[in-house]
Amino acid sequence: MEEQMERLQKYMAAAGVASRRKCEELILEGKVKVNGQTVKELGVKIDPKQDVVTVNGKVLREEKHITILMNKPKEYITTVKDQFDRPTVMDLLKEDVKVRVYPVGRLDYNTEGLLLLTNDGELANKLTHPSFEIEKVYDVLVKGIVKEEHILALRKGVLLEDGMTYPAKVKVIDNEKGNTKIEITIHEGRNRQVRRMFAALGYQVIKLKRIRYGFLTLKGVSKGSYRYLTDREVKELKHPSKDSGKKRDDARPIQRGYRAKQTKRQKTSKEA
Ligand code: URA
Image: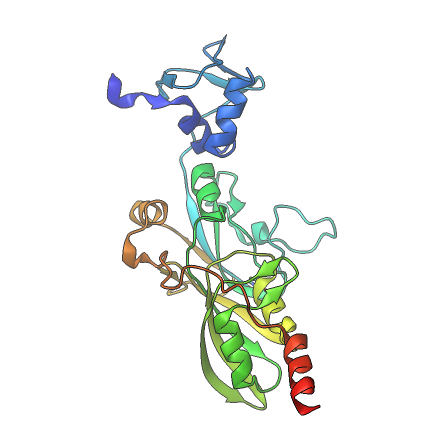
């Protein structure tokens, strides 16, 4: 029946093969067979319940998709296996997780907080694609008192070695024992981004915790434990509404962001 039919590349992406675009390439390269017949053109639809799809000779199976929201403790690495044998986030999963899931993006070894894991390739590809600008909120404990000019710099954009960061939302929560507690909201997912933003301004991050991912929070999930996302939550992640934490108010990074060194130089030239 027509409703059961699904585009081949969509089925492949959902089975975790790769992004839809990459799946299209695999089809065009002749690497995909449906019921033993090589399919080399796009637009073919299949019946996931009856047709057998193979990619490079391997049969794809329709798997029930699950997505897990974990509260990662620090000193766990966000990989499936660590070359140095450190504990990984997979070690925190119990027997109830019967399918192979993968972390969506990563949190550093020393970062805590909200981490998603899934076997839904389409969801993972979507959430990690640079064009997908979901809000990520972090609690940061910074060594020392962060100066007002540096808060403004974070709000404007900071120059890192891989380019200017987008404007961040920054709230100073508290100054405790000579350190500063800050809540920062970013939309990008660059490697060690928050730590590098503070380092670029001359600060060290003592503690970092992701407390929100779009509309998802850690509510009810204690450190080291996890819960399953509901179908509704997954749907909302795949097709975010305006209020679900995907949208930014400030669209572009400012081209001339903060450069700590330049400011010092400017100061010196003024003083001279
Ligand atoms: N920014 C970081 O510096 N580390 C993380 O783990 C996440 C965001």
